[in-house]
Structure formats: C-alpha cells, structure tokens
Length: 309
Image 1: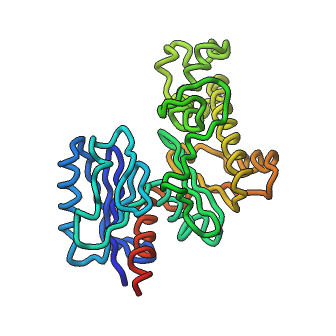
Image 2: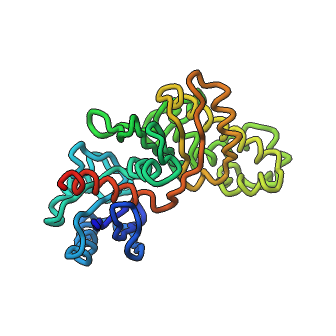
C-alpha cells in the first residue's frame, strides 16, 4: 500500500492528511490557517512534511492558482495567496517525490476516479463558490492545455450585462454564476427593479443585501428574492450549455457551497433542452470539501508511484 501526504492549500485554510492509492484517508484530517507571509507558509509546509516524512511515499499538493506542466510550482497564484507563492519550487521542500495540481483539476480527478463521475471518461467538474472553478476530463485524461492553465471555466464570456470581473475582464461566467455573482445580481435588481419595493428587504440599502439574504428570501417566498435567484440560475444554465456544446461531456458535476441550492433535475432539463450535442447528466459532487486532497493524492500516485512499479 502506498501512502501519500496530501495538502490542500487555499487562501484562508490548509487541510492535510495521509491517503492511500485508492483515495482513502489513513489519518485524521488536520486544518491550519493560511499565513499571509510566504516564509511562514514555507515553514508550515516543512513542518507538515516533517511530521509524516518517514512513513509516506510521496507528497501531493492541491492549490489555488495555475500549475506548470511539470507539476512543481504555481505559475500564477490568486490574490489571496502570499506574495512570492508563485516563486516556490515545491520539490525543494523534501527529498520525497512531490506532485502539485490546481485544486479545481484535483477535484475533477477525484470525482472522475471515486466520485459522481466514476466510469465516465468525459466529464467536467464545476465549483460554484465565492468564485467559479473548473476541471475537465477528456477521454480519461486531465485537460491541462499547452501551459497547464486550461479549464478557466469562470472566465468564459456568457453575458452582455457589462459586469466587471475580478480578472479585469467583463461578463465572465464567474461574475454571474458564483456566490459573489448572486450578491451582485441581488444588489443590481434592488437598485433598478420596482419589485424590490415589495420585498421583505425593502428597508435595506441595495449594497447591504447579501447572498444569504436571497437564499433566505427564497425560502420565505419573497418575490424579489425569487426573481434574483432565477436570474442567477439562468446565468448558470447559460454557462453549462456553452460548456456542453464545446466538450460534449457525459456529465457535469457541480461542487462548492452554492451547488447545494440548485435543483439538479431542473438544471439538467434546461441544459439538454438547448444544447446541440448529446444529452448530459448534471449531478452534485460526492467528494465534498476534501476533493482537492483526494484528487491530488490519486494523481500523485499515478504520476509518481504507479509508473515506477
């Protein structure tokens, strides 16, 4: 049995545990806060590795940011990662084999190997959270592109409402379909649509309305909240239709906190009513909050350990 130390690095937290080659957790999943200083972060990585180094065969990292083709460093980190993160060569942290992968790609691999897309060689995993991420499995292989940056699902262009995205562009899928996108849609609707005047939130300033307000408002059958939610849902469907027509996948798996508010049967029916390829299955993810760790460990096993046997 192979043992892989898997570390999931996000902007606010770090999760880590030891897994086997089938994606089973062998040790307790531990959590630390992500520091803002790169030297502190490196020390945390070294301390984690030192705690398990004698018993493991390899180390896997799932991380925010685009990863290079050799899976050794992050080439473009996200704004919430420490300055200098994209200069770190992860192979310098240990003498054991190291494999790093973008967290959305790792999540997609976890769903493909052990989760909702198991047995499907053409599948897409979309993460709907504060932002939108994506990982693509094409003919049983992780799609990485010429530089390793393929799969930037959040930045396909879907709309003409002239909304600025965090990437600097306009009308990106992420700026509409994410939790942040739902909040912005809520605030815009409150400002420009008369339906807000009969809302349970009519005494709130538009800029103070949150994603959670809309979710709660839908539960209370508030007409304004339902309208906002339906706009958000339509934006998600629009993006999924685009992806379906381009990749003709067997399934699209939805992960992330915002996915729990979707009716998957309704979304699937809407996507298949407009796509021009074969029908696609739309399903919730099964790997949960630990998909990054699972996928990275499975990839490390296949790339570093299995091929050496």
